[in-house]
Image 1 (cartoon, one colour):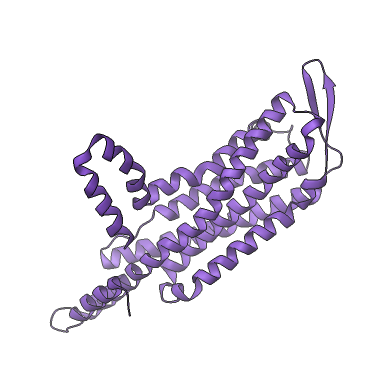
Image 2 (tube, one colour; image 1 turned 90 degrees about the vertical axis):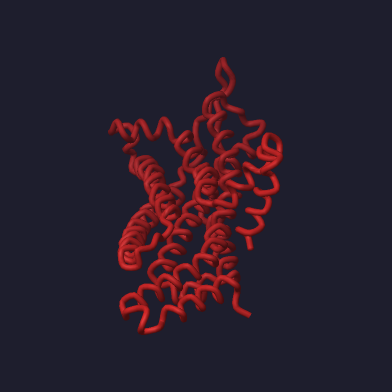
Length: 303
């Protein structure tokens, strides 16, 4: 049994196939528009499933980043060093899952716009879950060294001062830098191609293809390059050789907080259903007459 939106779109498409009412270019454009509008229903759920996992790890990452920031300022000392070490490791794990989730949404949008006829076959629920499982496993495996490489502290008058890890971690630095570089380069190519095809289709069909997710991942890609600069500068010992490197090094925890929190507010702007659900409690409190209308809107949009 086809979903209602597909039945409705196909019925409209058949009505426009008549030679008396449309030309061949118009029929082709409408066929493309019908395919795109159809996969948009599936695409929204797939893209936001990817965003939900990234958001879950982003929440953990934000807590870990704040713990790291506090430790760098005041120093928690060796008493709770194992937990502090775990928090440092989780910043890397969460950033990796964030990059992977953002890249998956980039690839999701790319296939939706450029290859809509195979989108449903690629982005099945099973494939998405496997993708997310691989993401988590690889993220922990790539940063496993951070979980057992201890931090050293020195006693000072004001408390404890961190001296860094007991041994270098070049492998993690290389993996982080290379992953971010590859992510940035490939994402730029996919995003550019996606925007080009979407604009081209919009001009032909005189329609509007949603670009919010594309713009979001483009901005997120630029933020990811900041961490790439930081990791590369630290790896090659360039942290004190350039004003940009010095600024990024001094503000890396704040930048990481911004990077890991981008999903939270961006998804609110991208999802109409999420915005409606977020303001529904305020509507019920301050505008009780409109509360029923808000509830109806949510039900219809989800259906």
